[in-house]
Length: 251
Ligand code: 3PY
Ligand code: MG
Image (cartoon, rainbow, N blue to C red; front, side):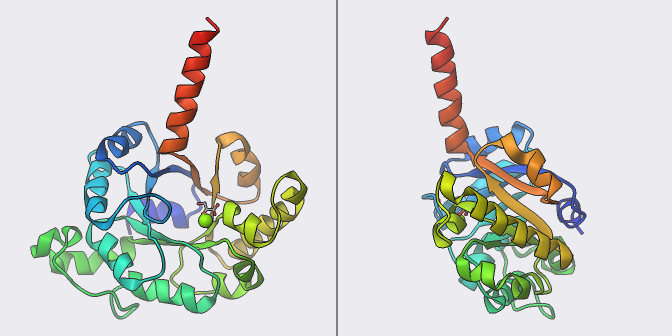
């Protein structure tokens, strides 16, 4: 098993961020800055399939595992990023056990799943297929997002799906889907997050969450959430520039 997957499954706290800027320089800078992993966001950024491989390569320069949030559930987009060398996938908007099972099938080679064999970067461009086949099922991380009202209602069936490693909570979509927006919805949203985290832990799954800032990581760690995506390169860049400019203006 890869160190990365082992740490995830063991519930070790891991801190990463989303890569949303479609350029390898940003990924290289982020990877060098000390994250435990990063997640290339192909769902909500304009990062296309051809660029993903170079972004993974940029992360590899600093030996930082790069997972990819795929745009949807299509097995071919999951296979494409794994062939490019991603350390795992984050599958958004998983609302049923059938969708979670399909993600397992797309991520694992037979007999565990239905991933197709090909000469991609992960398999040494075809020169190391047998070696890659031996280790891929063991090394690749599968995280699925629960972030809809349906997913919340069906949480027990989703967390029971064998082969899912991390249940990742998307509070933004969840708050919209269950109508828990803004400060008035905070209590409802928190209860939903805790319901998902508790069910996932009871089923032996690691739990992850997106947080826009690191401020409340301690609180969520107390709820046994261990896998964090904190903001994104665009959010951190904007906040850093704003704070430097503010400091300079008040000097
Ligand atoms: C959400 O909050 O909806 C997310 O998907 C965060 O990653
Ligand atoms: Mg979301």
